[in-house]
Image (cartoon, rainbow, N blue to C red; front, side, top):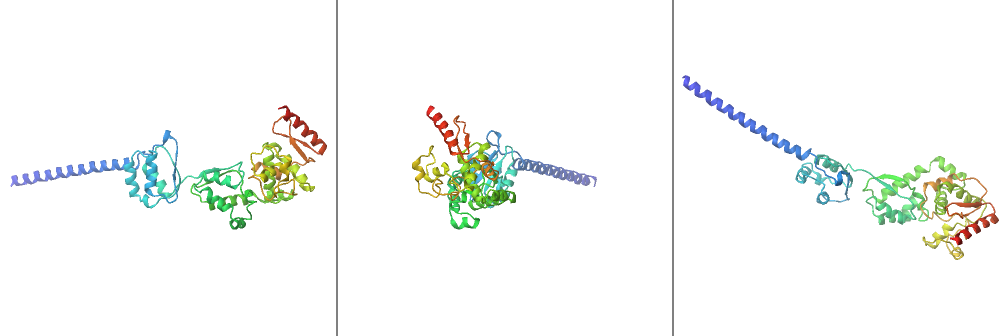
Length: 353
């Protein structure tokens, strides 16, 4: 009887040992799988060139394979198999969001896929200045967001779309205020223009509208005159004085006789010197022939020149010409005889060169 009990006890001990061993093996396997899963999901995997943040652009309509090709091409993922496995588990191939994604060195596959799946893109900074016309502007903008230049130009030359905003093909440059703006990279042409219209309405607040009224101009006319001031000088500290000269001429019914408008009328933007023959060109932008302001801005004016027109220097100057020291500044005159003397000094200096 004792022998029988002893055999049963031995059997039970063996079973317990087997259970312990199996359980131990299961724990080891679970730990191995858990560690591998941790390595795949949480371990740093993204490696950016020189350790700097990397901009990944996902175009509208891109497929999962295109995103994967981009990651491979730039050799951005250390554990590519782990990335693909996790991407499938998180259904990323079915949730491709276009945009600009900022990848940081040392990100895990999990962090990267969460960013891409959630469409958590980083806005891009869009800047523009010194733009001659909307075509040049469109080219510059298309280098910074996904919208192509043709789609932007198409909107900005469409009379119907311009009319809804209160502009036409000649006045539309006034809509744009050179500055730095934030956009999502996958912004469409329409959303870009809509945003610019919002910024325009925000800029022309009650205070600025009152200032425009005080100088006898509408906001578009302010931009038109500002564009002329911009082309007359790159010296911000004399813009208000030049604006004052042109406002004096307008108030007294003089022709503006602004050389930059002739350059625009002729269409030769490399023209350095305006001659008498240019003053005969037939164009509404020829301010030697037609009174008042031209039909619209001759460039996209800077904020500095707009502020100069809104806050002009009050004086009795009606003339100005380049200084003989070639500093880029101007001599100002109240009378034609004084202006003639200033011009002669400049011509002598020019000949001396």
